[in-house]
Image 1 (cartoon, rainbow, N blue to C red):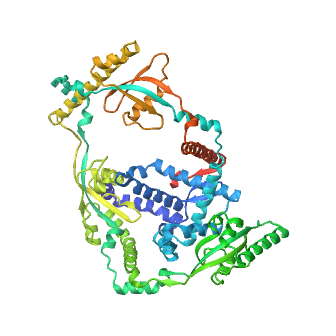
Image 2 (image 1 turned 90 degrees about the vertical axis):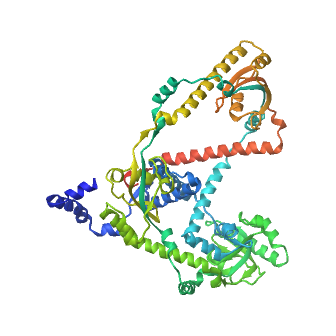
Image 3 (image 1 turned 30 degrees about the vertical axis):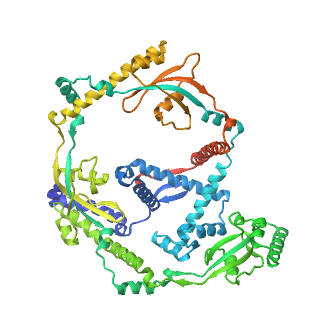
Length: 636
């Protein structure tokens, strides 16, 4: 295809191509192609826009999560499918609807709650204490700012408040609880015996005619698919970083220019008592709250235990139970009036009431940690890795355009790109469209390798963006067509398949005959003895595993009708072809009253969670049904 374009792109045909290419530049200006133009929306939710950049960021995050979770089982076809993209869009829409509803309902997260979460999070602690330097470094390593991360946390806390509000409103009646307890405690007593296919294998013969017929009827099973080997080149930040050398002078220069990154700001340990005041409270309510806070401050100064006062009187749900403890605090975590007061206090001092938008705070300064910084030796390795990554990212950006251009401009070979950018020309083993190893584990790579340009016309592929930091181009090295394996190669496998099928069929026929006899009144013990089977008695409780009974048999037992004047007979075939006969003798109703306290609590919590999830799902559906949503498929 590309070859034909190049061969014919001369004379008047070339001029037509030039004119067609020029039209967008004339209509929109050349700057659009280099500056990127205006951001495109992918969806509008009740008038609020979600643009292409937000969508692509969410899509890449979801793909990265899939890579981490699936590991070696990761399938690029799944994360590049329309279904995967639509799922990301649905999540973005649902989240925006929840955010909108939370805003209108007035859900809020206080600075104290946010600070309490951050300072008590283990990933930001060293030796059991919050480390502001570690906090800042971890955010930088993730490409986050403090403001951005804390805004994200607020959104997550609000969403959790909404979930909890709905989940906690789930009502579980005593009758619901008793019914489920009785059901889960039900016990069934039964005998069972197994017919194994192996007992029939020795008597089964397979003719050459059967083998040939099976082969002809199942040729597709014995077809080896089209296979390909490829050459490929890869430009990646990871590869580039391996060749980057960072001198000691560079390390020292970076350290001196960025010492603040490795400093732990002054931190103070504090506790507080909060007396809340609403924003629209009248003067009398404000005065009463201030007086109450002042009284508590005096009691603390008079010798009463501050933690006990906080537990008894503080109206901050996030810290009251912990005696008002807010942990380590640095500047920027609290609202300004609180922070100004805290950082002007002496150790063990108790403040006068401090007014913020949440109410009046009585603060006790319980500890001080001065500003301190890490020495160069402590952060040298970290600086080297960060600098190698930064330099490699710059090299990647500088070389990506050359990579793309040379792959396109010289489509008959990858040699020019290899020489120009000093890349390694690599090769794969054989792989098919459906599976491969190494780089061919990527469904996108396999699909590209079998495209017409590569597989048929022997041209370079288009440049593939495996992720944000990796570009790949490939071309065919060798290929072999699909072919049916000769009968001689698969004859033994076919014979074994036929023998197994016949054995399973014989097992089922024999089992069905015995079941008919049992249901017609035959004696269980006689049937067992006459057919040289082994009968076992089992007692199965619905929620308790039994080592004598497989899950599929247990499920069948609990589907069976309870026995009346005679036992209930039935059967189930398991995955290996074995045929299980059973005789259900007794059903013992569960005694809800006999359940221990732990089981009762588990049942109640299980019912509440299930209903809470249903409530939240219904709530989301209601938001979705009443929303005005416009999706721009062409921008996905």
